[in-house]
Image (cartoon, rainbow, N blue to C red; front, side):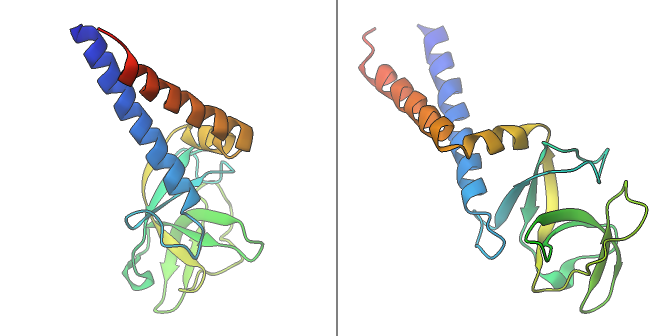
Length: 159
C-alpha cells in the first residue's frame, strides 16, 4: 500500500515536470514571454562543448540586455532565425560579441537588444532530444494519452 502511494506520487511529480518542460518549450518563441521569466531551447551543435552538447536543453532567464557581461552565456536569434547560445567575449552599451567555446572565431553577427533572448542559467543533458521528439504531434498525443490513462487508472483503482 505504501509502495503504491510512493510510486503514484513519483509518477505524478514526473508527469508535472514533463508537462512544465513541454509548456516551457511551447512558450519559448524568441519574441514570446516564456514561462515565469524563463525560456528553453534544444542545443543543435557542439559549439559550446563541454559546457553543453547537441541534444542538451538549456534554460535561459529573461534578463535585460544591459545586465549581461563578458563571460555570460546568452541566447540570441540569428538572421537565419535559428537560436544561438554562445559566450559573450566582449560587450559595449549596445552590442555583444559572442563565440562558441569550440569555435575558432567569434560569431559574424553581433547581438543587440532586438535579437537578444536571455542568459543561460542551467543545462539538462539529453533533454533536448526528448523535447524534439515531443514536438511530433503523434508522439505528443501519445504522451498526453498515457498521462491521462495514468490519472484515470489512479483515480478509479480500487484498494
